[in-house]
Image: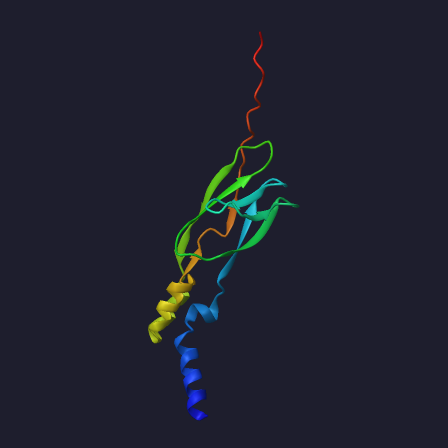
Length: 134
């Protein structure tokens, strides 16, 4: 029984890392845009957030190793693409003390964080199409 507990504790140490302990797999990002603006993931076209009041909305977005392409859409405005940039998460440097933690943080994406956590979106009004005169 003691061996089982020892092996479980050892496995827990092997599969944990500093970023797993200190940070989550999602990070809050605040979008500032006109009310009614919807934020979509460009790759999957899944709605991430919608600005409903006070011209801001905060959404928790899963961290990733790569930059995330997003699109802001609102009726009467042109779709506005923008990028959430990825940056190195300095808390993963604690993994020097336990090197397998680097692999865990890399695999889970927790080794990285979103650089711009407040995104100010300026939407351009769509041009109205007028019918030709004869």
